[in-house]
Length: 106
Image (cartoon, rainbow, N blue to C red; front, side, top):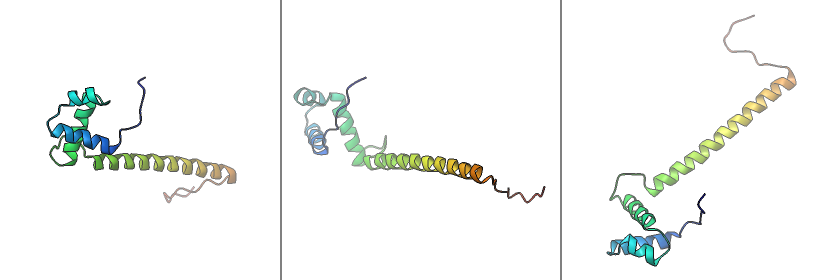
């Protein structure tokens, strides 16, 4: 498994993107700085999406919103599961199964 590293600071990424836009190639910058040329290409693409120059993927804001919604969805599923288990436990403890709302009498 490859080592993971902390993300590069936003200011650093922006400076690298500006150097590419000023005429430097990602390959040149990769030799001079730590990120790979592919990483630099990805940063430039994402900066173009964020600026509205590209429409082939989500913007950074859209990606962050998606991550937030996924976290919220996970939390809500966990809460629902906990509540279902608690309801089942209370039903067993009280020996009281709630009547169905079908209106049929037995």
